[in-house]
Amino acid sequence: MKRILELVLVVILVIGYGMQDAGYSIPNEIVIVKAPSKEPRNPYQTEYEKMLYPTVRITVGFATGSGVVVTINEETYILTACHVVDDESIVDIELYDSTVITASVVISDTTKDLALLKPTGLSIPYSAQLAPRNYTPYLFTPVWAVGCSLGLPPIPSQGIISVIDKDHWEISAPILPGNSGGPVFDGKTYEVIGIAVWVKVYQEQLVTTMAGIVTIQDIYTFLEQVKN
Image (cartoon, rainbow, N blue to C red):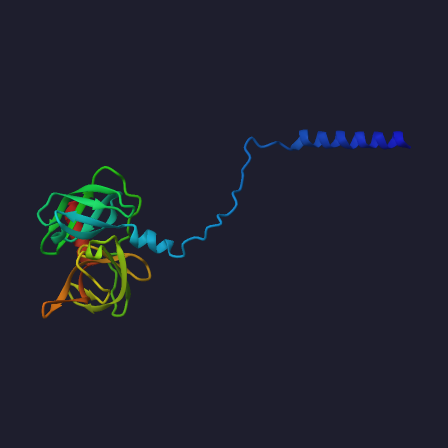
């Protein structure tokens, strides 16, 4: 009886070995699945990447303004207000991670108060998305204004579209000195709908919640000059 059991075990082992040779192949590479990180994901990471990281600080002499990184024809540029760069041809740009690079002024328009800069050297990993040219503004549309208020790193402020005029829109998001040239985003799509360029003044005091922006339509008209 013992002899019979030994023969049966040998047959089973041989069959198992034969099946491996007949159809099963051992993979050359073993994929190791990493355990999920114990650190919780930042719940606002999307907002960081779409609005905060593309916003840059622009320094011209002792003055500070803001700008936003955009991609045009697969090339990286920085959009800002014309009065931020003034008459300079080269300016300093501070990125989201405190890296400082330089950028040259490609074109500026004093009428629309817009300027386009071309960064030199280091590539910039984050870029904001422009809203479509046919973007329709509505009163009460939620917006985010992001800029380097008082020369600090980019700070977001929330508000709504409060005035829709033919050549400009106004927003209620607080705008302080240093925000000039900074992007204004649609609060739902996180797309750039304008560039902050001015705030109203009453009795020599800034009314920070009554700010004017260059519209996305004027931005596209301005960018057409670059193509030409």
